[in-house]
Length: 249
Ligand SMILES: [Zn+2]
Image 1 (cartoon, rainbow, N blue to C red):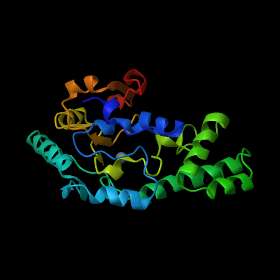
Image 2 (image 1 turned 30 degrees about the horizontal axis):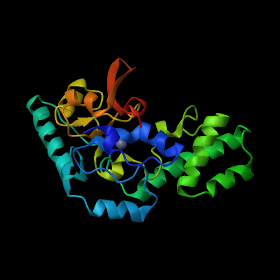
Image 3 (image 1 turned 135 degrees about the vertical axis):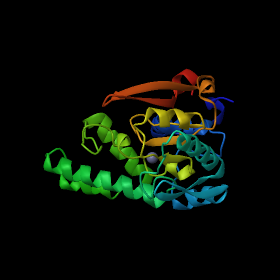
């Protein structure tokens, strides 16, 4: 098995960028999405309907994920409990999401960004409206192009790409029911326990976000993933991402 054999067809520069940011998930031993980005709610529902799904309580919230991913998480919480630690979900939407959830998060950032850049004088109200009126992938393309070519950014603090703050709608790993946002993400012991049960950070800079890959960590380089680390607030965070260039993708 290798990421180059598992990653769906990449049909555009935007899909390639999304694959670079979120693509590690396609090496999962669970069921990966059939495409880089879902086009709409109907596509997401059709995919989620095929999955073997299990609900469970993680800390204060009940969440829903693919059954095999839940099994890994339950085993991890048991090991953590033996060491007197808890693994909890950050919020009610920390596990499964619907397409509409990812769209709402995206729209919130885009809308705040457009307002900000009008105030800054870098966008006219008319141009902002034309971006607001775009739908789905067309709007994703317009936003990422503004970031790339005009330095008009849509992250939470308007200083870098929106993809650092929120996934493109239809490309969130939460749609695959293989991602969970963890409260104790700063605890390196929790990170190691999760890794021991197939759960890893796979989205650079999204610190609480873990993805179910299901493989032992020592296998990940051979599957086409690359380890990077981020030092932040006296913690070192580890990320496994898809190395597209090295994989010849
Ligand atoms: Zn997440």
